[in-house]
Image (cartoon, rainbow, N blue to C red):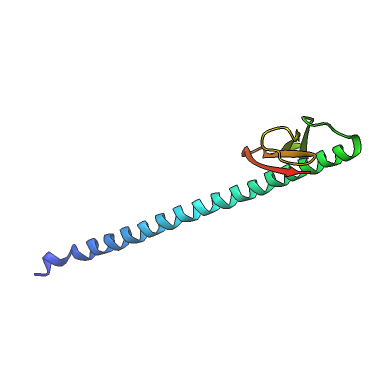
Amino acid sequence: MENKQKGASLYFALDILSILMAIVVALSTIILIQLKTIKEAGDSVVAFYAADTGIEKALYEASKNGAEPEDTFYGEFLDNFEPVASYQATIIATSTTGCQSKYYCIKSTGTYIPSNTKRAIQIKR
């Protein structure tokens, strides 16, 4: 009877190790997905603030120089001499579809360059 039970503890140990390995792999996958999501959220914030800067630039130019509809302003921020974010802001005429304003609208798209994450803002004036 003793000879038949010698391998039972080995099978039991392998079962326990397999279960533990499955748990570790599952948790690692969940953690990696969460880290990727957090990184993408950070990229999105940078792109949003670049778009916001484009709106501010277009408003400044419109008030200072009397910019006309369909004028486009480009900008780029540098961090350690490498491009990080850019924006493209356009003043849109009121006659254009999507701009229901008394004066004009401004649409700005910000881009976080390393991951090509884009966010856009449109305002009415």
